[in-house]
Image 1 (tube, helix red, strand yellow):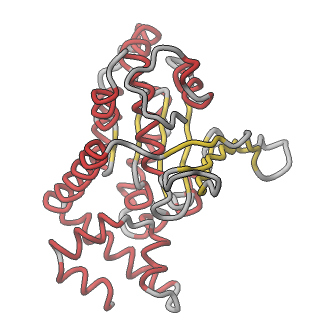
Image 2 (cartoon, one colour):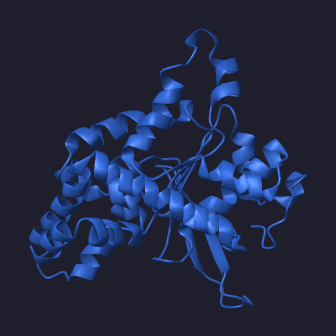
Length: 289
């Protein structure tokens, strides 16, 4: 992982092996991975920096432009996921599939904070959306050569996401030897084949940084917040779904405290902040139920 945020990336030697694998996967293969770790550890920034480096290299563009290109491929809500997938699938030329894939498949997609809308408790409140997501993500290899997700833990996501045999997990932990607050250790684990022993295979850990320029981080936060607020305003059911998931988990595990429920649901700080600010009544209903 580049630690000095180079303005230009001109050769693959400047990329990590993971980023090179993403580039080499196009157009026929798929790199599918989920970052997991404690809140604030840098899961989203790993996705952000990975996408930025890929667009810097592929398009030969400046770091500032690559930040924006990466954000153009971030998905924070289920309607955004549907739109991105359908844009490719509904326009696929099946008579010339190889050439179409080469020209039109995404090189990078990031589903950020996947636990919020693709968490396992979503099944209790909106089966229709779960079915729609499964139908689309089952065909994701026809849509993109890279799908990265972030979540507190892979175990908190819907079962079909956990069971994809090619889904790597990327554990992010603090690098105690780092000279600043941004140093991290990234451990990429690949699921074993069914005929192998249970567990995962781990690649050698990568030491890197989650630092992004302040203006780029602010733009990331702005776009994310805009997407979530728009979702709650246009689809009031999404807000109610979160409340229903909270209530369901509280009934299933009555001894859990509010903070632990929020953690298990994978609700991001932005979600909680928006609920408190714009839907205070519903939030009070949520926490007092």
